[in-house]
Image (cartoon, rainbow, N blue to C red; front, side, top):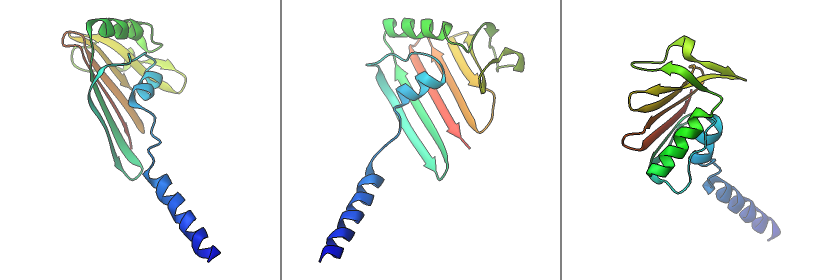
Length: 143
C-alpha cells in the first residue's frame, strides 16, 4: 500500500513540475538583455514563445502611451549599447556595434525610432521601436 501511495505522489509531482511555466517574463527578459527599462502596464499585442527542442524564439510586441514611449526612448539613450552616432537606413553595419562584456550589440536611430541588433551568434536579439505609432517589437531566438 505504501509503495502505491509513494508512486502516486512521485507521478503527481512530476506532472506538476511539467505543467509549471518557469520562463522569465518577456518584459524582464528584454529589459535586462537589451539594457533598457520597458515600462509596466503596457498593452501587450503579442507575447509568444515557440520551442523546438533546444531551439526557441520569443516574440514580444507592445503598444505604449506617449509617456511610456518617452520613458522608453530615454532608457534607450542611457543604454550601454546605445551608439549616438549610428543611424540605420537599411541594415546595421559592423562598425556600429558597441562591445560590452560578452555581447556586441547596438541601439541605433532609424527614421521611425530606434533599432536594436546584436552580432549574430547562437543567441540573436533584435528590437524595433516605432516612436511614431508607439509600438515596440522585441525578438529573441536561440539556435
